[in-house]
Length: 86
Image (cartoon, one colour):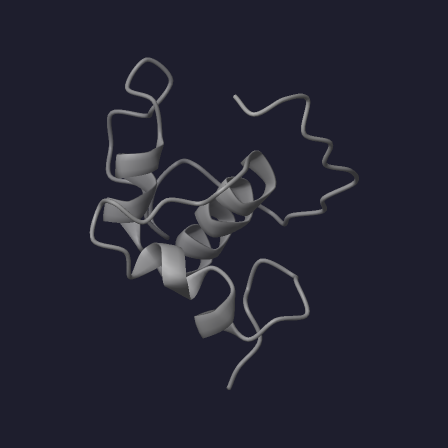
């Protein structure tokens, strides 16, 4: 299995791949997992996943893919602390 592009030590299928393959009801459980899955989706060219997880008020109008004006250069998770259940 290949490593997940989000930078975790897990294989893609055990990491962000499960959120990418979800059928709408399977969602990343916390902010860190969501951001990792969104970065991995960008790397893998999964524009539909990015669009579906990006709030419409801040989402770019153009398609989000390797040719868009949006450029994510990397992901470096410094810290993740859950404040509460919400």
